Amino acid sequence: MATLQQAQPTQFSRILAIGAERGELVVTNDDIAGPIDSSDEWIRQRTGIITRRRAGADKDVLDLAETASVRALEAAGLTGADIDAVILSTITHMHMTPSGAAILAERLGATPAAAYDVSAACAGYAYGIGQADALVRAGLARHVLVIGAEKLSEIIDPTDRSISFLLGDGAGAAIVGPSDTPGIGPTVWGSDGSKATAIRQTHSWTELREDPSLGWPTLRQDGPTVFKWASFQMAPVAEKAMAEAGVTAEDIQVFIPHQANMRIIDQMKKQLGLPESVVIARDIAETGNTSAASIPLAAERLLSEGQAKSGDLALQIGFGAGLVYAAQVVVLP
Image (cartoon, rainbow, N blue to C red; front, top):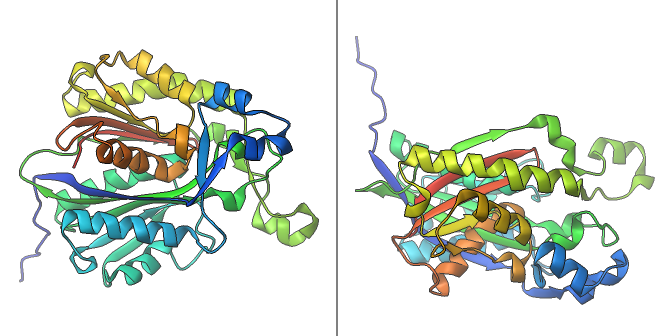
């Protein structure tokens, strides 16, 4: 009888490179304040956002993802043919099928790579990194492309004061591959569906079909519920990610939380007891909240501007609609 063969594992993995693409349109607070009866001062005080980046009508979420992916591949010295799996984290690919990842793989010349989409909203990129780490170490893939990409301007109601003024468009891509040393700590992830309606679509596509007068579905959130959950329940998740990685707050050099709200970022930093020397991602001020794209976009900015460097130990955590979350400690590429 033949002996069953199994994939041969690889001991360690790491992020090899990151690429980014932001929407080309710079949208100021003054540009959007009128329809929500607000002001630049009100938005800055409550969110820390000065501008947000949005894409034009001629670009969709896959266009943003493709540009970010090409940049990540170039930075890693790889081509699409070197990719064994493509994981696209997004909530704004406007086709239920086929997956955006499969289309993206074809555009990049990565066929016949495995390809699938992840719907985990603002935690999507961290979910993808956790899965890519597992695929590489299990021997199921050598190089995995993980993309967080959103065109949130497609699902915005300009008159909504709960979430729409926060949102931007962009994509961040990372290449995960084998490493001689540990580069990605254990992923700590989870969900709390009891709070699923805290961030939600106004109505379903089925409801729209039955009643076209409802109009295009857009996003809403219960701000106080989300703020409290993110500010006070996500720090323990980040602490667990550090503990499972075998590091302490004093070891962390860079903190890259989901770019949801500057006040949430500051509250989490305080609760975690991170050292004053830690570099904190604050890309939200200029890019806005880009959901699944926010962590890789923020990481790329820190690296490209020299605020962080290759080899730095970074704590990253994503959290959002679902409510879902994921955190891990990584070595920056």
